[in-house]
Image (cartoon, rainbow, N blue to C red; front, side):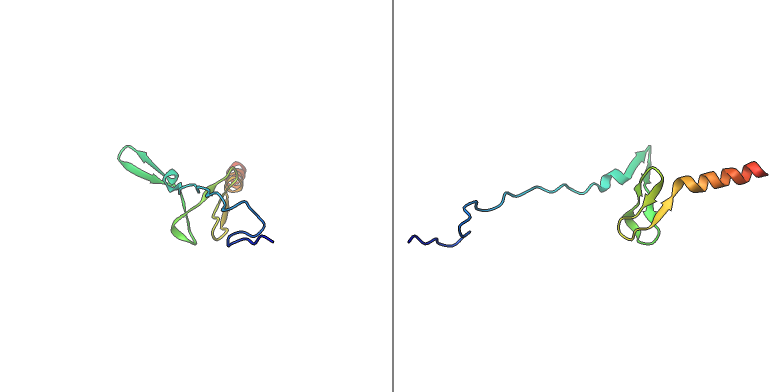
Length: 84
């Protein structure tokens, strides 16, 4: 009987291939307007360094799940102004 020495037993695939992970994309949250540095919004709960994700109807923090809905506040303010 042949015996195997070390490594994977019976499975002759060997080591897994290394997958390269994406680098951080924090540079997307900063823009330059002339001489001014413009930043996207930070989470009010987590503080600076944790950015809010911009969606169509809301801004969202993936760390603490803080959510602000954008569309609803604008519509209610317009209705109040129309009634006056």
